[in-house]
Image (cartoon, rainbow, N blue to C red; front, side, top):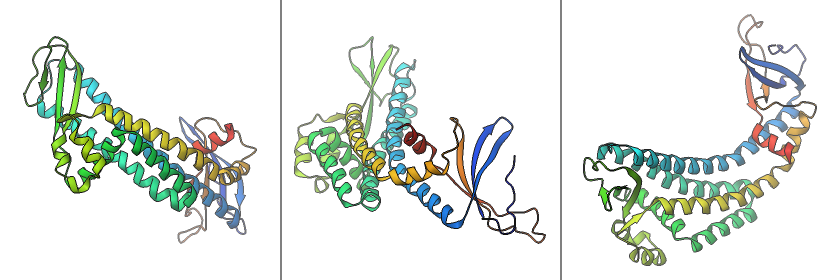
Length: 301
């Protein structure tokens, strides 16, 4: 089935269920909408998408950290060990991605929280961040890494491969790491490089860094920091879902008679006027997809 072209005098907006099939997409018209109905539904879709975008960024943080851990796992099992430059560069990329997305999530949370959820909820989220900052050295370190990378570049990264057949570490300044059976990879940054950026450090972080080893192993700090972000994000999700009750209720009611399979989705089509000289076969068309993940979660609640 294809969309029915709008007839003269008919409302310009259509609510449509889309079912993907091996042959293409099957469209089922649910109802025609007037301009006011379309506007309400479209605004509801956009608000849900806006507030879910913060959760998408949090998932980027988790994905980046997972990619880093997976890369280290692959390198640890590589035999013989890869060339230093080949091993270090992708690891550095994933480390920078993880540290950058950590701060990106917090920045987005601050800017979007106040503008989309209001000052009271934004203050609650700020307090949650402050609690994690006060409680976790790993959180403070990752927060500082993003600042340092912005103003000074990322600190020197060192990759160490531990062999189960050797008691020492093989440092990534060598082209190869020997013939052992590699079991773990340690990634560290230089503490003194962070300390040289004293003007950007508060007194608490500066004193903590001074008491750390010269080479700061990153992976456990990243793991702890991501867990802290998980707690902050959980609070955000609670507040977000409460704030979106009326929008999701409106979207759900608009398709109350429709059951939706896992891969099916709903979209708003806008067919303002036929275009082209003949004004018969060509149509201007725009669409807004319903936020299906949020809507399915709402229906299950």
